[in-house]
Image (cartoon, rainbow, N blue to C red; front, side, top):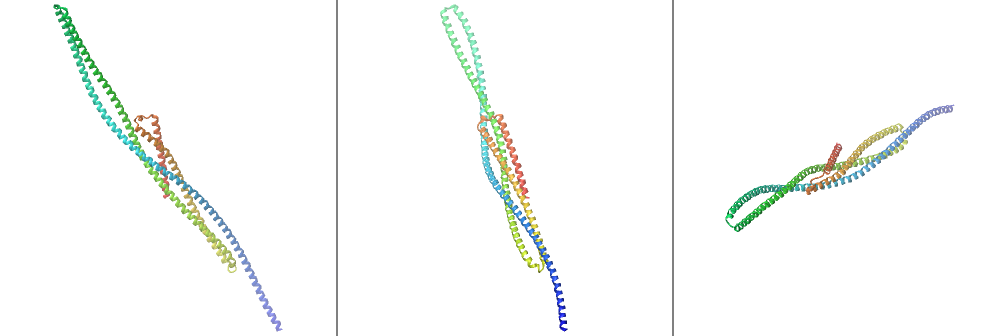
Amino acid sequence: QSLVEEQQSQLNQYECAASQCVSELQKAQLQVQSLQAKIHESEANNMKLQEKLNEMECELRSIRQAAQSQERTIQVLTESFSTKDSEAQELYQLMEEQNSTLCKLREMVHRNQLAQFKVRLCAHHLRAALQKSRSELQAKEAALKEAEAERRAVVQENEMSIAQLKHSLQDKEQQLQVITEGRSSKPRDALLEKLKERIKDRDRALERSIDDKFRCVEEREGQVRRLQLALREKERDLERLRCILSNNEETITSLDALVRGKELELEQAAEAYRNLQWLKQQSEEKERNTLREKEAIISQLQAALQTHSLEAQDLTATLVARVQAGPTEVVEELKARLALKEKLFQELISDRSRQSNEHQAQVQEMLDTLSSKDQYLQVSCSRNSIWAVLCCLITFIHCVSHQPCLATVPQCVLEQLVSEYNKLNDALRAEKRLYQSLTHIHTKSDR
C-alpha cells in the first residue's frame, strides 16, 4: 500500500512536471514563432536595404556617367581653349605687325613733315624770287618808260631837225635861185648836188638812228613780255605749291589724328589681350579646381560604396548571430544605420547638384568668353583689311607729297578715299564696342 502511494505521488509529480514541460514547450514554441516572425521582418528589412543599396549604386553609376560627360566637355573646352590660345598668339603677332606698320607710319609722317618744311622753304624762296622779279620788272618797266620817253624826245628832235633841215633846204633853194640868177649853172648844179648828198646822208643817218631806237624799244618790249610770262608762270607755280602745302598740312593733321587713334586702339587691344589671358588663366584654374573636386567626390563615393558594401556584409553576418540574443536591438541598429546612410546620401546628392550647377555656370562663362574672343578675332581680321586700305592711302599721300604734278586729284578718287575713311571709322567704333563688352565680362567675372 505504501509503495502504491509512493508510486501514485511520483506519478502525480511526473504529471505536474509533464504539464510544466508542456507549458514551457508551448512558451518556447511561441517564442520560436515570434523569433521567426522577427527573422522574416529582418529579412524583409534586409531586402529593402539591399534594394536601397542597389538604387544608390545606380545613382552612383549615373553620377559617374555625368562626371565622365563633364570631363569630356572639359576636354573639349580645353581643346577649344588651346585653339583660341593659338588664335590669340596669331592676334598678338598681328598686333606686333600693326605696331611695326605704325612705326612706319610715324616715319612717313616725319618724312612728310620734312617735305612740308622743304616745301615751305621752297615757297619762301619762290616768294623772294617772285618779289625780286617783280622789283626787277618794275625797274625794267620804269627803264622802258624812260626809254620810250627818250625815244619820243629823239623822234621829236628828229622831226624838228627834219623840219629845220627842210626849212633850211627851202632857204638854200631860194638862195640858190637868187644866186643862180646872176651866176652860171654849173657851180650851181655842183652845189646842189653836194647839198642833196648831205641831205641824203643826214636822212640815212636819221633813219638808222630811228631804226636803232625802234629796235631797242622792241627788244625792251620783248624782254618785258618774257618777264611777264615768267612772272605769271611763277605765280602759277606758287599757287600750286600753296595748294600742295595746304593739302599736305591737312593730310598730316589727319594722319596725326589717325596715329593717335591707332595708338589708343592698340593700347585697348593690348589691354583686351591681357584681359583674355587673365580670363584664360582664371578659367584654367577653375577647371583644375573643378577636376580636383570631382576626383575627391569620386574617391569619396568609391570609399562610401566600399564601406557600404562592407557594412552590408557585416550586417548580414552579424544579423544571424544576434537574432537569438536580441532581435529588436538588431532591427533598431539597422534602422539607425539606414537613416544615417540616407542622410549622408542626401547630403552627397545636394553637394553634387550644387557643384554641378557651379560647373555649368563656369562652362557657360567659358563659352561666353570664347564667343567674345571669336568676335574679337573677327574684328581683328576686319582690321587687317582696314590696315591694307590705310597703307594704300599712305602710299598715295606719299606719292602726292613727292610728285607735285599729282596734287590735283580727281573727284572719284577723293570720294573713294572718303568712303574708305568712313569704313575705317565704323570698324574702329565696332572694335571699341567689343572692347567695352569684354571689359563688362571681365568685371562680371571679378564679381
